[in-house]
Length: 69
Image (tube, rainbow, N blue to C red; front, top):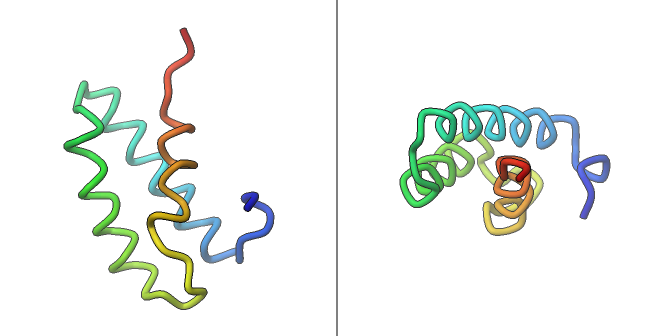
C-alpha cells in the first residue's frame, strides 16, 4: 500500500497523525506513549469508511517519525 493509493480523506488523516507524532516525538515522548493515542485518534476520526485499520497504517506513521542518524 502506498500513500497515493489511499483516499484523499485517508491521506489527510494519515498526514495529520504523522505531524502530531513528530511533534510529540520532538517533545521526547516515547513511541509507546504516543502510539496508543494516535491509534485511538485514527479509530475515532476514521470511522472505518474505507475499511483501513490502524494496523494497516501504523508502519507509515512510525517510519515517517524515525529521525535520520
